[in-house]
Image (cartoon, rainbow, N blue to C red; front, side, top):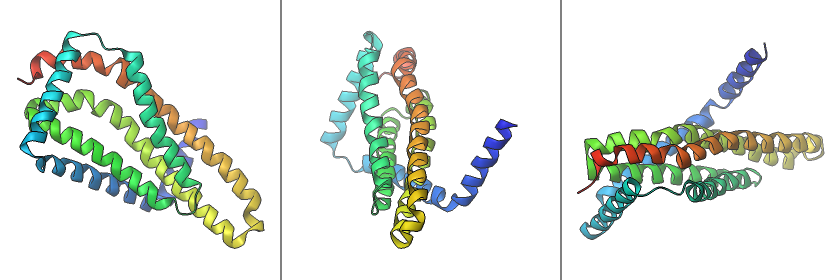
Length: 215
């Protein structure tokens, strides 16, 4: 019964916000495409530097034990910064354009990194991406888009409250609490993805490095 109620609430939420989900998803796709195309625009020197850096990274991952705690801290900082920026954008009247920009930049980073790996390693790069990028991003990206939609809704509620003021004052306080709790909810899933990145993905990288090592 509880599960059915949750499914009903989620379905209603998605149905009411399908246009916003679609627009943020398209912004993510644009970012990924732009990042992938940017790889082709790298100069020979820039490309060689990145190839050497990536080859060194793979050799280190294959020969040395990764400090998972340090990797966890770095990943936590990066993702916490993104979540915080999305949250802040939602509590400001002019935050909606920044939400689109944040989703675009996230897509660009993914597109550039995956595009570079595939360009450098070919078919092996696809294998590398599936084992190292996909497991965490398949969790993080839906959460980022959901947080973006949540922020857009709250920002629009603020705009409405400026028009109706006193009538929505109390509702806005409750909406703020719900908005913050929703951010915490999706942050838990992002944390799970970060833990996977820090403690599980290095094991995969170490296993496949002998197969895909760049020479």
